[in-house]
Length: 516
Image (tube, rainbow, N blue to C red; front, side, top):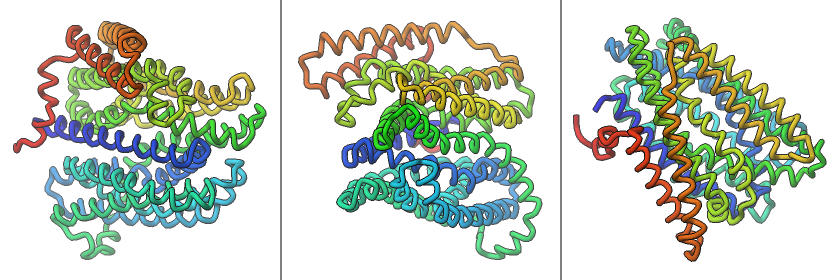
């Protein structure tokens, strides 16, 4: 099995486990602190993501690329310079942004979010900034060596520790108020990331073949060229992420202001935003662990083919990635649209957020295309075009949130529709840019067949849920119906030859553990 395929499968498996554990984490939070607590929690998350994006500065991708090149040449000195310079950059930036967030957190909570209670989750999550900064450097190093297991295992460890402590931390702070409980939930994230860092550091000490601490400052002084090499790759890469992070940072602010204009009270607005971003969106983003894994593996594969001018290979890889994204995303769309109400009821004890899932799910298939398309753009040296596309989508989304969410007839649903429109626009712009660059043509019949499979499986699943299994307890009724829907969907994919038995065999999990 090639390193490309093996790395992809490892990341997909780890992503699946992480997503499942992440949902358990969200269910625990939702049941312990309710919609309002989840709203406070989710309002603080975008600020954290923005600060982490600024701290990382796109370095993980740059580290991965440069380490891979240096490893191929057997240049250990270069690898050491990359690590020394990267650690210096991230540690300096994390120190600056940690202090900045401590100082400006009260202003952000009071002025921007209009709910001063967000101050406590903001303060609670601050320690995670330097932790993630250091972890990202080590993770980029392992990815550059094409060793995906340390990064994959660290993700699982982080989620396990977080879930283990979430109930303890939340329950300990709940008597002091809902805002303190949300802060307790944030603290569990800090401990999870810390455990992940300890594991990554242990694996680094165990597997590394160089000493970073020895002559650290000498390597730093000699790393001027390495700094420029890192920045040359990191700055364009971080552009799109920055736009996404800034947009996400502004999102709860614009939503809060818009709902206030629509006459929605602050506490109600916080609850509604929690339902949309804490309950509905995580379900809609479920298949993204596959597209993220594909994106990570696509960059080096497409780069290699592009350097050799193998356009047919690029087109094949892209079609393969988009096909896999569509068929996995298609199943998620069917299941979430048909079973939105029972899923939300079983997970959160309420189906109030199910309406967001039903409305947004059919259009969210575009989101599953976005990651692979952006990875291809980066591999084709079109990071600037990807950044421009992301900026256009973010600007349109933010403007629409203000226009639609401020309408009393739409309210928070306007924000959901705006998110969908922004996502669709960025994906279509990415697709347009890629097709022009490599003369790629979509295989329309594959997508027509996929849509037929989705409609057939969804219809059968809906009928089975309401007629065949109606007398079963809700848990069994939902699980059996989803299993039937999924089985029919896979059978139809095989009949339409959208996936082959050979592909299923190649993706066997057992092959991962065979020695080369």
